[in-house]
Length: 260
Image (cartoon, rainbow, N blue to C red; front, top):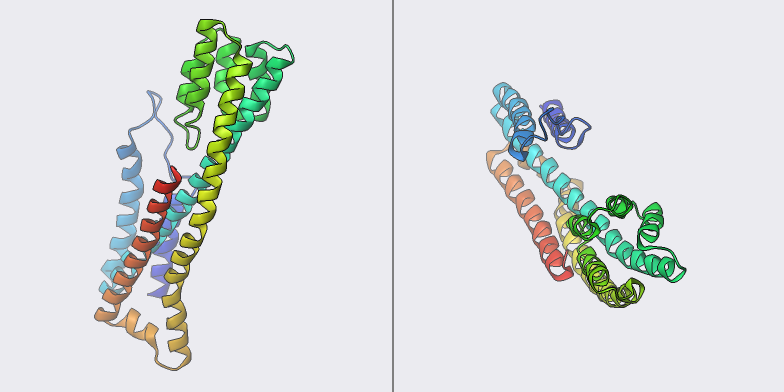
């Protein structure tokens, strides 16, 4: 039974996280998100169903394993997205400084953006649009939809105003960089204050496992009750669910305060 549950958890991990998690897009364009998610869900249901057919208790444990792996992967993905967003926040400020320096050195706006794209690939599409005479502001606004890159909308607005009025783009980008730098400093202070709350939430999520280890060391056999009794399975599922909900809730509050 333990092998079946472990294989179920491994299957969920490979389906949701492995290289084949998302099927290739059809020739006519990318498949809708609901279609892309259907295959992994059916695979998970098939594995859980096969385990449940061999043993109802193993099926319950398989469902718990599915929940644990899915919840953990979601938290990992959100943490990775938060890191990407934080990097983009800093890159936009550095981009404004670099563009201002290039323009002050006598480069054209297109040349400055092309050189900046070598260090910040995020603005590569905007640089290509500038080189081909396309709409740079539209490209920057589209790039602003990336996590943490919302400040590119301000850069796009400065670019558009300078282009229409003929005022110096370097001065506009300098003022934008100063404003964004102040916002970035505030964001870092807030992130530092939130770090303790996040650490406390993670510690509270781990404490029950330490209590179980202490109980097992004292000869109480808590794992036998949790894994071998219906009431134990219910307690295990409820405890894991509440632990994940607590972590997700704290992260959601932190993202709301942090603006992420």
